[in-house]
Image (cartoon, rainbow, N blue to C red; front, side):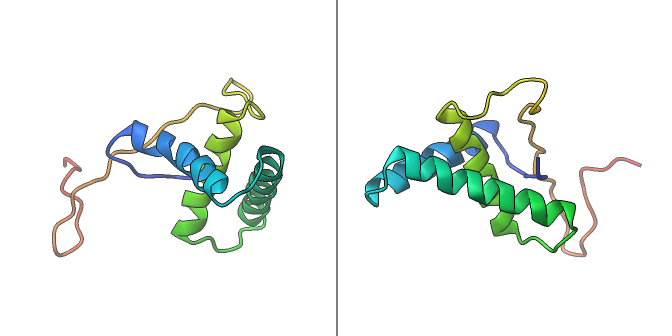
Length: 103
């Protein structure tokens, strides 16, 4: 899974829900949305394995697609697929040093 920073894990879980709701509002049916999310997750995986540069929007879209597939029951959250873990955003000074690190 990509490194995704969030203050609250429920914010990340909402990505899948929001992606599904927006797709339904645009008139897409569930089988089509499953196919599109699976294609995007596969495309992102290929980018990561070939070390192609990924933008932050790509990471966000991957998280949304992965969580949407979990919500639809295509992917199960288990030991094989891994568990959802997020990192808390760190506070940075103006000069770019991380304040959360202790020396």
